[in-house]
View (spheres, rainbow, N blue to C red):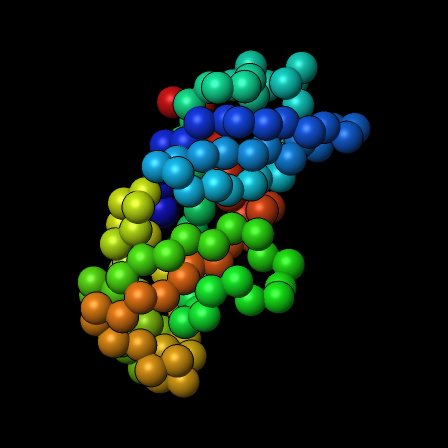
Length: 133
């Protein structure tokens, strides 16, 4: 699991869903959660929360600002690549700390990933989980 701390900067609600804006070391992120400030006490402006996502939920790209719907983009340098027959575990050093992504080995080869290379981890808003400190 990837995990780091962030501060809530904005909350928009609709029904039982909230779109939560976060900041961690100047990195802006968004998370959709099935909770509201009325149902979850941790959902308050300026609260610090844990941001959590699985390694399989982080895609890797070599290009910034692609025209896609993924809003969360974390840049970092590759510090480690562990490639197996099917899967590759890519570790990045980012402004929020180490981030790990598991992608197919074929994708790692296609992207030409190398240690030291600057890449971007992309995570969907519904894949970022939030929890109390």
